[in-house]
Amino acid sequence: MGEIGKNIFAYRYGDEIMVVDGGLAFPDSHQMGIDLIIPRIDYLQQNAHMIKGWILTHGHEDHIGGLPYILPRLPRVPVYGGGLTMGLLREKLSEFGIKDSETDLREVGMNDKVQIGTHFHVEFIRMTHSIPDNAGYILTTPVGRVLHTGDFKLDEHPSDGLLSDLPRIEQAGKDGVLLLISDSTNAERQGRTTSEADVSRALEEVIAGCKGRVFLTTFASQVHRIQNILNMAHRQSRRVVMEGRSMLKYAQVASTLGYMTAPDPFLTSEEVGGLQDQQVLFVCTGSQGQPMSVLSRLAFGTHAKIALRRGDSVILSSNPIPGNEEAVNLVINRLYEIGVDVYYPPNHKVHASGHGSQEELAQVLNLARPKYFLPWHGEPRHQINHARLAQTLPRPPKRTLIAKNGDVVRLGPDEFKVSGTVPAGAVYVDGLGVGDIGDDVLLDRVNMSQEGILIMTAVLHPVPHVEIVSRGFVRANRELDNQIRRVALEAVEEGMREKKRLEDIRDDMYGAVRRFVRKVTGRNPVLIPMIVD
Image 1: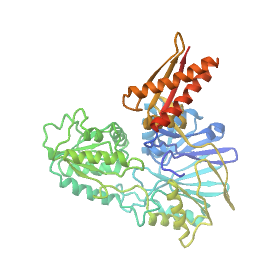
Image 2: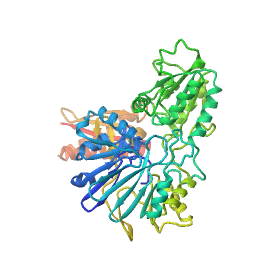
Image 3: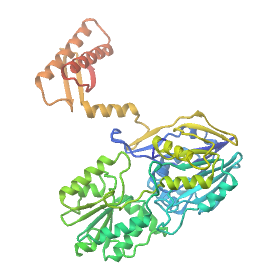
Image 4: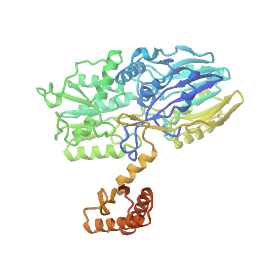
């Protein structure tokens, strides 16, 4: 709620809990040094004995990426999801050394029904998205029926020909939907989201017009799009090189499970040396401008095996995730400087969102005819615009809630309200540390990046003196350094004369230098005072 990322929520009835998804989010630019963000699970840990089962809607990182951190901290319960979802999760768990025997993963098909505990009856329904085996579900509970769309768009021409199961949603609406939980990501966009078939036509047209090597980046999880690209390459007599760890991982899992078939075997970057430039197509990572991705290394000339040159073409078949715009623009500008041809949206229709726009959101609302409505999966503006859209329809929900992370929503036949909160928020993953960094540490990192750091060491014996070391504060300035030393030393000597405790002398030195530096420079570097007796 209120964000896009680290999706997880739970249903509770009596003494039973069913959990949905377990995703991660990626850090913003101000969250320096953070690798990943996962959700807090305090509530689940406190009520671990109540958890009866888990369901997964699809295999995107924002829905399953946090599970290697979450599952080991909770009891082993059945986890249900589609074939590709489970394949990707198994691969992810194995990377963390989590054995199959430590989990209970159960593959389900669309329209399969599972019983979780005694109170939760789940029916999986197919919803088109930007990854295969994407599911919504109908949850039957003792108080009524809940329909959750999961991430979706109503693509009328999906790559695999498998449409969203709108007839089942319509039937659920006729039977009675107490609550609809629906994807709000594109609630501000009018009309319908572009079909993947339109993207394929645009990509093929662009690739056909490229005279040299083609480098294409997209989300590694865009299995259908990558399959279409493989087919295009075959038709245009180009051999495909897959570059990037996540791209190779997704392709391997999808191929093993039958979701992807390469018309021609993949080549390595070394094996294409004998081919002409117009016979090569690289599919690589880097759609979000990640510094260590293949495309970023190509753009900045740090790739160990491949170098871009004039005559090459780069296609960004993606849009920046909010927060990544600066990184993506930096890469695009660098590509222009190299002299390659660059194709990216909105200049070229080489990408389409995986989330439905207003017409599709309205269509689901009209079919489901819910009594209550909970806009989900979006920032506040998306949730609120989704709620407003619902009120314009011929049969609006009786009540809509704009919930926040941590809200407890009480649902009954004649009840729909926020009744409390539970701990919620972010757990930061930094290197091997999980949760050992908080907002205070991030604030220090931001302050150090903006103002620098100044370390003062006061040595008391045999003669009191002060040494200082600074980084990122000011350029070498002997006069300023001497002034800071003098201010610090005066505070130390005064404390020694008054026979203060060492801790108090340290604090006095800190305060005196803080005031002086702020007065003289107008800056607030991170100060670290130390006393050596």
